[in-house]
Length: 242
Picture 1 (cartoon, rainbow, N blue to C red):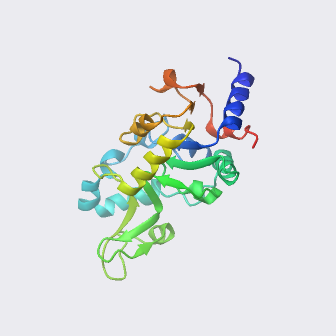
Picture 2 (cartoon, rainbow, N blue to C red):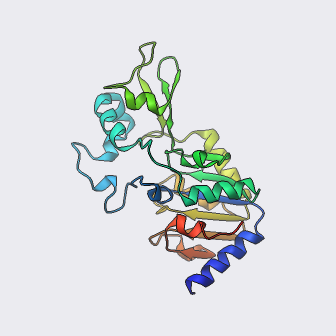
Picture 3 (cartoon, helix red, strand yellow):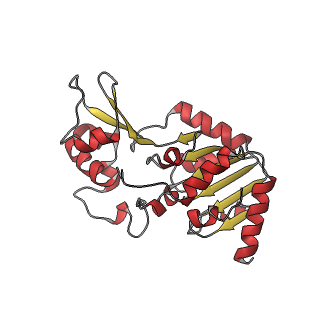
């Protein structure tokens, strides 16, 4: 199918849908300058004293907190990043009542910055941080401007509200995301390799009519989709007329 025909088919699906849910991964934010983990130039292919998977684990955070924060400030918080065409189009679709929810594996908060309201952040957000002792909240700016291990006014260690390796997903977020996916008529999966579990397993709850996949590379779900576009997410979504 020609590119123009694929876009026409996508537009037709959007126009005929009443309840769309968007499920996105790192590829949604790479167009905002935020690196993903698994690309050729992603975090997994950069050199550190420890591999990123180890640094971003609960055990490492608890036992090497200072080293964790050195990496976290340098690589995980990107305050200069702005919403791209994908984030903006999704917010527009939600405002029009077509898109009912965004389910994201990203922790950058760009969907909310673009104007999206109903966002399920499966892996948390760098913009929320809390004291492990008294639970006082702190923003990302506080973390960036602190040195060493950031501490609360009560003396407790501050922890980012992001899901580290070895930690479970928030149950309320999971339930909301699963419910949204299970009840939508169109699910758009974008910018994800669908290899990170348990998040990737959420698409199995979809029972609707149209399953659309937008991803630069092939995924295990390609053959199960109504429509597949191997292109950049922002470039595809920007062409949708609302």
